[in-house]
Image (cartoon, rainbow, N blue to C red):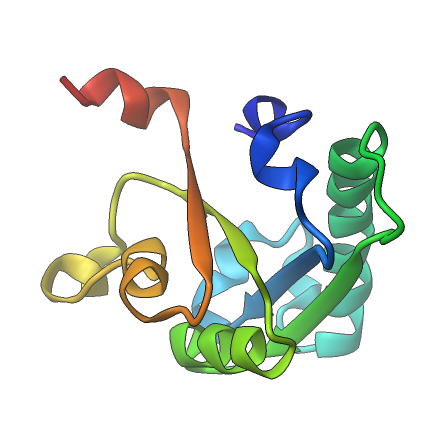
Length: 137
């Protein structure tokens, strides 16, 4: 998904690029070490290192004065926190990875990317996985 964004016109005009991650307890299954689950400082270090790798990959070839900003939050309501933060920093664009499916509790609610598409105070670019693209007609 990230390779399609590297060098894309979507990023070329960006002035302030923010890489945000909002963690909540429901995301424990994605941690490499279950001992991290209740220690947000360890989670922050792990997530920020991964986000730095992504930032460096995406921004390496861009003629920009901005080196990118990384923000990591713990909040039980990820959707609202993301919109509040994007409004606070007056973001022009947010890039979000769409998974193409909801978690079990998402059956009756919209996904994170759907919520941002409807409520974010800026443009939203949704990256789709190869599996999700294959399912689209």
